[in-house]
Structure formats: structure tokens, C-alpha cells
Amino acid sequence: MCGIAGLVCFKEGCREEDHLALVEKMLDLEAHRGPDDRGSVSLGKIALGAVRLSIIDLSAAGRMPMSDDEEQWWIVYNGEVYNFKEIRGELERAGHRFRSRTDTEVVLHAFMEWGEACVERFVGMFAFAILDRRTGTVTLVRDRFGIKPLYYSLRNGHFLFSSEMRPILRVQEGLRLNRRSLLEWLLYHNADVLTPDTPIEEIEALLPGRIATIHDGTLTSRVYYDPAERIDCESYARFASMKTDGIVGEVERALAASTEARLVSDVPVGTLCSGGLDSSLITALAARGSKRLTAFHVSVADHPDLDEKPHAEAVAKSLGIPLVSFALNGAEYRRGLPYTVLASDLPLAHPNSVAFALICRVARAEGVLVLLSGEGADELFGGYAWRYARHRTLLEVARMLALLPRRMRQWIRRVGYAASGLPVTGLRFDELIPLALSLVDRDARRAWRAACESAYSFVPSAGDRAVLGAMLSDLKDFLVPLLRRLDRMSMRASIECRVPFLDHRVVETAVHIPLGQRGGGKGEKKILRRIAARHLPSSIVSRRKVGFPLPLGEYLSPLARPEFFRGGFCEEGIGISRRSLDEIVARAPENPFAFSCLVDLELWGRLVYRNEPLERVEESLRRLEPKGS
Image 1: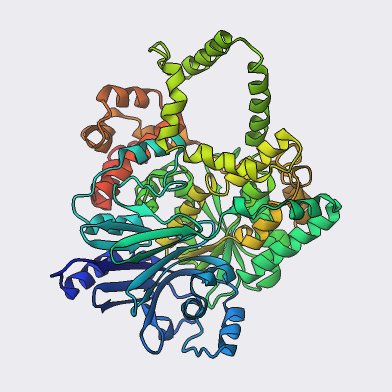
Image 2: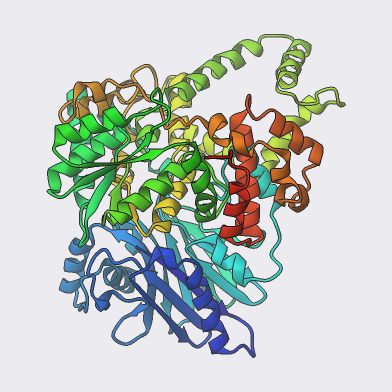
């Protein structure tokens, strides 16, 4: 697990030492991703660098950039390919020889042997760049679901890439805000998900499941993995013909194998265990394969009604493993907020990112460098039942509305918009709202959801197709910000986080299970509950989903003061009027999530875009703390 960076020059007159210095500066800004080792190399017009968090083969043999014996092929790599030993054996039989025990070297030789097709063989999470010096071509690859990040910029005759966006922002001069992307974040609370755009113009994300090549100043990319294209009616029919016990057994075997594979490590491994179903099940499966497992938990210590610590303790006790808990309260939340926003790289997608950031620091202090987490279960097995029920309801409402006269439909629509505070009194304003919203993300979300629903065109029920399509679409839309949170918060603490539910073989099993057997309706995650019943206390198995709620209004109330925003990023950087800011501050108690978004945006603008020192921003928040706290 590492941070990578690189530069490709297409200009004349540049100096190699300047290129290398620029790559070194990018590495400085993502040094937290790899505190154990560091390397860089200049190869004519191309410079590569990496910082390393040593997880497999802790020796110097794993140093990057890494090359083959002839130094024709070079790699910088971030991630883990869990089946690297099997692939290595196949490559050795084909005549390849290895100098290390790392998966990095296996990825390099797999690319040398099979080219871009090698990614089809990889089981894991990865983002890497490979240089072929013979052709001068650099190939960038990101894993199927976007667990590991990769950003790039092609500008002024130079192509730059790095594991995080901020290093590119700091070394490129004159980069401006991408206001459309910021609007997308405000509307959907995420960006760089279905389009490559980031909040900074001319910095883009390599999207999940894509391969990009840069050659002679031209960037091309292609999709090598699309979950919607993996849906087939034969696999669906096979599961439809199976009894529930058979489906449960197949899912359990796939998930157990995925969890076991993610225990491979030369350093201690733990889990993030909230006490909910998903993380508890992963903890239970991991405990079967590891004798030194530790579970980590965030306790909402000042709100017993929200605190899940008793459930996490019950899980740990039943498995006979230690539980390390961090007590979160309002003061700890506010102290951790600037650190978390800076770590996030992009504006925060979820307020509870602070809790993830703080518990990862605790794990690092305990000497655990690898954590397993339960992301992906909700998207695959129907954990967002309320959202899927809404899809069915809206489908029925749309059918009923279609029976009404056109003028009546218009008034119903206007009343709905007006109730949300939109100015529908403008001429035909209500008719333009859907068009305006679709342009925010270039119609990407609507098109993606339609493609996902179309993937299940062979399913007879329109309601089932709508819910199945919504669950599938979440794998690219709703899930990616959760994975960004997981990567940034863990890597800021120099921790590697692994997600067993997102083994593509588990995913491709789940997406072919019919809705009635899988969940997504009234039977929320019933397959996982059947599996969990074999490993966990019944109190955990039967718990309803609660997410990770925090008392945001209370935690952020000391920041709900107009002076916090005076002369800041929101006012001066993006031009939100002082009156609008004051109104949002005044409504903070009744709209804590909206206020949280504004605070996150303000802090992101100061720390990431304006590059204000973390210490200065932390001090500005301390001045707002209640006296005696």
C-alpha cells in the first residue's frame, strides 16, 4: 500500500532534475501513504516516484519505482493483489524470475506477459502506472470499484499523476476552481464518481474500472470493467431456480474466501467493527483465520442512545478477540474536523468521516497496520431498504400521475418544487429544473441508472427491475464516496483498509441473485443475516440497520456563528453572499446536515484550495470553543 506520483514531459528544453524535484514534492504531500520507504527515478522525459507502506515483504526488495532486469519496464503501484502467489506461479512456469516476495513485482511481470489483459486476472484493489521505455508509453490502471484512487492532469506539455489530488494542485500553477463540480458536490455530496471532474479544473480522476494510456502527448482511456455489463440472464436464472439455503451457502463460501484472502499480511491485521451486521460478520469471518485479530470501534460516548459500543463488545466477546474503542464527543469531533477535511482531499462526503479518521489513528498507535471493513454490503444485499422502497413508490406515483390531465400534473409538480423552497414563480421555471439538474453532472447519473435498470431487462416485474437497477447503480454512485472516505482516512494514518465484500467474485454472485431472495425490500439483507446467524449472537443478527448517526447539530453548534465564515472561502472564494451564509448559520439547529456541508466546504477551501496551514485553521476553530471546554 503506497502513494504514487509521476510526470511525463512532452516539451523541449526541460531539465530532468526539475522533473524529479517536482515528483519529489508530490511525494512529500502524500508521505503519509507510505512512511516506510521512498524512491524516485528519472528516465529521460519521464519521472516516477512512490512512498511505501510495507505490508508484504518488508525488505528493501519491495522498493519502488521497480523495474525488470533489463530496466525496460517500470512500475509504481498502490494496492494489494490478493491472488498474487497463484499468478506468480503461472509466470514462473512461463519463465519469469523474481527478486522479491511482493505483489508489486508480480503485477509488473503480469503486465509484461499479458499486457492490459492482466487486470482480468487480478483479485484485489489497485491503482498503478507502468512505463514501457521502449515506446515511451505510460499505462494507468484503477481497480474495478475504485477502492484505490488515482488522479492526473495534462497541462502545459506535462502529464502528472498521483494517488491524491492535492499534490497535483500544489505543484501546478494557476489551477482554478471547477464551479460545476462544486455544484455537483453540493447537490449529490460527491464528485469524481461518474464523471472524471474534480473540484479543481484540469485535474481529473481515473474512474473505476478504467485503463488510460499516455503516449506522445495524447491521453486515451477505455473501460475494462463495468458491473452493468456483467449481468446475464443465465446466471440470474440459475439463482432463481435455487433454494434459499443453496444461495446462502454459495454467498458464504465466496465471502469467507474473500475475507481469508484479505488476511494475507506480514504485519498485524484488525477490523473496523461498529457492532452492526456487516462489520460484525467480516470480523467473525476474519477471526476464524487470524489468531491475533483486534477489533476497533468508535463509541459515541456522550450520547448513549446513539452508542453502539455494547453491540461491538458483544461481538468481540463472542469471538474471543480484543476490542479497542475510541470515545467520541463533541470536542473531539471539532478538534478532528480540520485534520479530517485535509485528509479527505475532496470536500467531505460524510460527516462521520471524522470518526473513521480518529479510529484509524488509534489502530496505528496500537501497531495494527491493516484493517478490514464492511463497505459494499448495503449496496449488494439491500441495506438501504428505505431508498429502494422509495423507488417502488415513485414508480407507482408516476404511473398514477400519467393518468391525470397535463395541467393538473404541472400544478402538482410546482407545488412539490415550491415546498422545497425553489422559486417556481419564474416563467416555466419548474419545467427547466430537471434539465438544469441533469446538466450539473452531464446527465451521468440518470444515464447510469437507466443502464443499470436496462441490464435487468429480462426481469418481468418493473418494480423489481427498478430496485435491482438502483442497487446496481449504487456500486458506482453511492459507494465511491464511501470508498474515498475509507482510503483517505486510513491512509492519512498510514493504515491499509481492505473490503472483502468488494471482491469482484462476491459482487458478481450478489448482483445475480433475484430481489426476493437477496433483500432490498422488506427482507433487508436477509442472506447476510442467515450467514451471520452461524457466527454471531442473535442480538447482532436481528439488529436493524442504523448507519452511523452523530448528533451533528450539537457537535457543530459552537461553529454556528457568522464570524466563522467572514472573509473565508465560501464568501470570498466562491461568492456566497453574507446574507445567505448568515441564513444558513441561523438555521443550523433545524438543518444540521446542510450546515455541516457548509462547514466542510469552508474548511476544504481554506486547507486544500488555499493551502492554509492546518495549525492556523485548527486555532481558528479553538477560538470558537465554549470557555472551559
